[in-house]
Length: 65
Image (cartoon, rainbow, N blue to C red; front, side, top):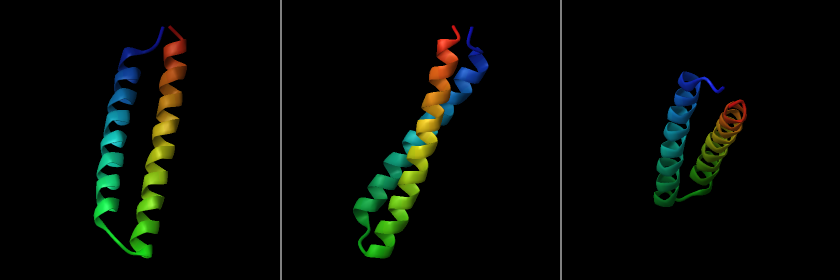
């Protein structure tokens, strides 16, 4: 069975990263310039990679049920 505390922690981290992604996308829409675009793209890619890893970890925990 999945550890409820571990699952809750992962869910919280997922929510935080999703919020970060929303903020980064909003910021990217407000900025202009190649340097800003590249920086925002890098930040978004990093956050997306973290989100993907957490979703995978959560799915693995849920499969243990």
